[in-house]
Length: 205
Image: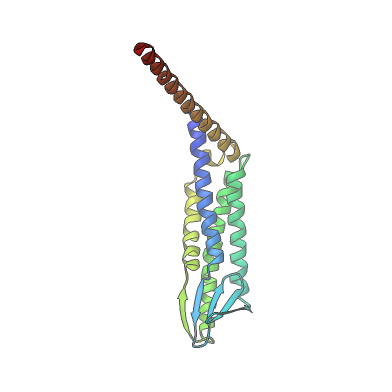
């Protein structure tokens, strides 16, 4: 029973953290807004970076983003990564810290998205063009909802179980034992087949 629970907790933690890290990464590398003007196309990122496109020509531009949006975004990313790392590598009773970090990072991500949108509304008064919300902004809002939800739903026994590397070692050991048993069965089948062939040859003689 304990072994099954260990496998479940280890795999669940790995899946949750992999999903969240993937979303955080995509949220960071996908531009949150795409602005099409008559001459250029601007890819605008929440951490203070902009790329200007003109046909096949690509140019990096120094971009001063609202300090509130950029600071909140970077702070929320750091909190999210720390919380996920603690879930994977925890060795003690830190369930409250993990839940608090995940809840806080979700709130910070929401505040960052709102501040970023306010900045884009302000920028629209000076930069005329078509504004397209990109998948990065959608992921940011999704993270701002899913992280506090995960923090409220994660069970203490999941966060306080043994470290993930021990669970993975246990899983690896079980898999190796299963493979060994399969090989033994195969050898038994081959041996019985050889015995039957020998007995048939003796019968023919």
